[in-house]
Length: 134
Image (cartoon, rainbow, N blue to C red):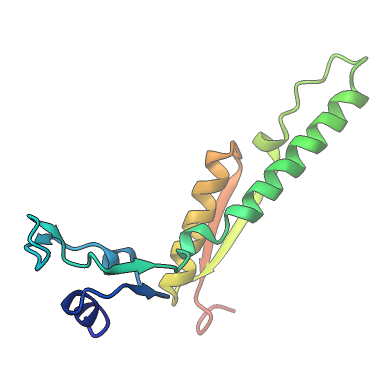
C-alpha cells in the first residue's frame, strides 16, 4: 500500500519491480476518473518476472535435448524393430527444494508442472530440511 496509494491518488504510473500477483489485483472500486468500477490499482504495472516462470527456459532446453537425442536414437535404430523408445517418458528428472523456503517450493513446483506439460513422465520432487536433514 505504501507504493500503490500514491500512484492511485496522483494517477501516476508506478512500474513495480516486485510483488506477488495479488499486489497487482484487487476488487474493483470507484475511481476519480469518473468511469465506473476501475481496478483499485489502475496505475500500478508489474515489471517483475514471476518466479513461476524461472524454470521455463531450462525445462524447454531439456525438452529440446530429449527430442534431439530421441531423433538420433531413432536414426540409429531405423533397421531394428525397437524404435519406439520415448525419451521423455523414460528420462528421470529429479527436482529438489528446501522445506524452509516457500520461494524454492513454489519455483520447483512450477518446474515440475512445466516439465510434465512438455511431456516428461518420470518427474519426481523431493524436499529437504537444510537445518535438520543429513
